[in-house]
Image (cartoon, rainbow, N blue to C red; front, side, top):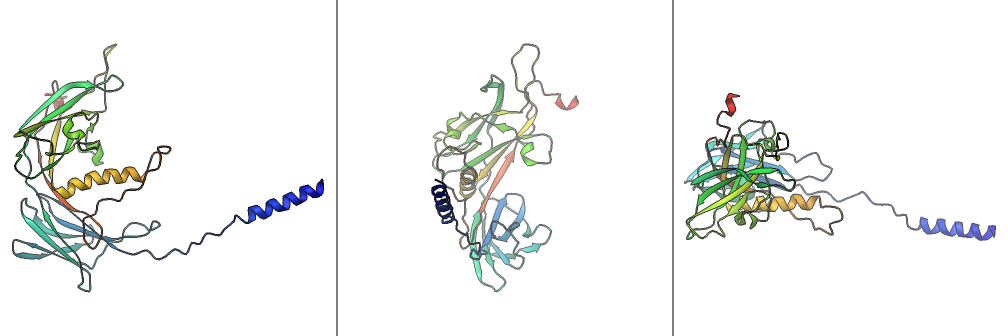
Length: 308
């Protein structure tokens, strides 16, 4: 019996030993491809970021400091200057709408790495705006406000693309803290985009104008005695971005990319989605937008908000 146990023990060791395999850590060198990001905002100056890709274990993307970035606009040529503080290439020229910007990027040896064009659309105006103090309730029965805006539409023209932000009056350190949370998307124009933020185009619009409704919350719901929970309303401003098609596609694909990076465990197989890239010969984003911002909107009862 003891001999049988010893034999089984030896066989078990041999079986488990045969499953052990040393993993090689001599991975191939990672290609240092260029990443060129050019986000143009009407009214701002021109700024192009050029970095290199790095491995997963790398510490950020190292900047390319010796590139040559040229800009051609209205038969004039400008050279962007590298700024060490921001690690970007800059030109102190205000970005204008409806103007064609042509960029060419060269390496230190004079080889063309990439070229691309940029056109910023003029901002869509806000024809009308209405604040609704109580627009509905959430799943817990807490009421929430909403903003309804009206934008113009010309069915005979190409599509336009819009992103909307509801901004708080205060200037917080982190950008996300400056925005109200938009949730419970119900408007068909917004639902058509399949993203949880107020991005839309005029694809479904048929008339000369269109109203768009956005539910939002300030994150605070005071209550008195046994009265229902009511979301607090405070002064705010509405910022309407008119995007070129590249920025519109970037916002949609970046949302899918971020969600595919961290899939929910147990939700099934989810293939990773690459992020948006429209830079030929490199990686990166070439896109832009213009915007309009309303004056301060005072919901009912907040007219003296800043006198408190």
